[in-house]
Image (cartoon, rainbow, N blue to C red):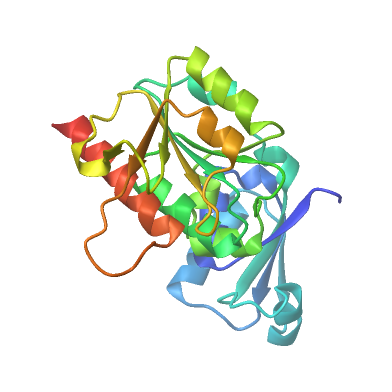
Length: 245
């Protein structure tokens, strides 16, 4: 199957079973593993008529390509997980809260960003199709289920997508060390899309030009930068804080 994708680990598999079980083509479980977490997976899989194969640990390790699978892995039909930006925006019951990742190529960083986005109630994460990590088994594992709950939308032209977001009345705010304001003194708009670039080069020039504002994250120590998921956590948490006051 061309769109088949591997998932592994209890968080990723359980989240998929509860959020989108019809996308699971089959699960592989280590023979003899029968703890409480595994029983929960097997009961849910049976309820959703998901095909389960019990295999030797060596075969499961090969299926998971040597990753730390925790005794369970499976394959999903990734084509059944596609979400369109318009679908997300037109069904919101509160002002849009989005995260745009420009050039994040490390799957561990993407997974961590998705986990943070889920924790802060972000409605969708947007990224360009090119020069981005894309969803894979590593992303799902690091995201601890968030890859199955937060819409991850890939677009062919990020600049055009940012223009479309503006047509919805969404303010485009980029993070930049040379920002005009700092995060703790910036009045974050109700409808906002935070744009973050990679740790090395930051946002691409065209992406930066489409931002309505540039905001810096104050640094009080000696380090010059932070991991992208940490930076995302700071801006998303501050957004939630301001929305609650």
